[in-house]
Image 1 (cartoon, helix red, strand yellow):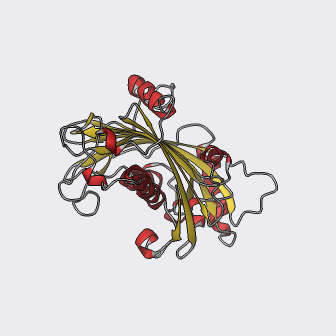
Image 2 (cartoon, rainbow, N blue to C red):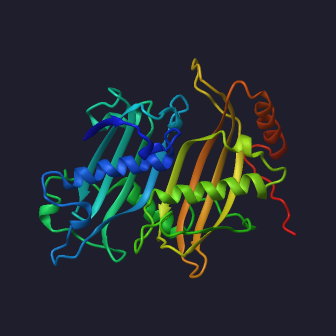
Length: 329
């Protein structure tokens, strides 16, 4: 399914497209795929006993090419969102999405992963009270069947088993946790858990605090505001409700950018920062999510001072080594 519409303030406020908005727009279209041809709404997809189900997300992979940052899509632009949904064994969902300007999204989903456009995939499952469930057959009759389990689901199980995204060991001295209180109405609807896309907001908050307050020498807020996402991988193991507190520990590494040859970019590619995170719920100590994000400092050409700062922080912190943290007093 491909939907085309104008980006309005209801999507992006007064700014440009963000990760949160991108994921929400893909989720909107994915819901329409799941309910097309039925009288169901997302809240009335039921199991055989009549219990309402929720399509939970277990693993997510988002990518944005350097020549098409997510923020390149601006308010009032006409945006096309393509979404392909497959069911595996009725319980599991394999979702692929792509975003582009009007006319840029091809009809064939198998070509989306190679297109120079922002893409997202996720693996999910129908759940009831946090457990995998199975919808009544009528609710998935129109959704194509996948021949194999979603690749991200297989990867999720491997990450869950070893307790880390990569096979490399976790840092021996994790950072002091960064706290994010979940607020009713802002982060989670009344009586409901957080939507999977809202975790990007939580992660970005922790990332900003870590880079501007926890590492030494710290990065300026102006430089940190220039970062744009190249890739994000998230593995979800739990969720939160209002009044929970998310506790995040982080580690970050820098590297030099590798811009594509021959590309005239509207910004100067600064350093690339890779941030790994573990999110837990403070009171219960439940692991909520593991995340790894690669972001580029996309610096406006006119801001020469930030270009120099990006070069300095790369020299001070080094490449591919954990960024030095400020000692906590």
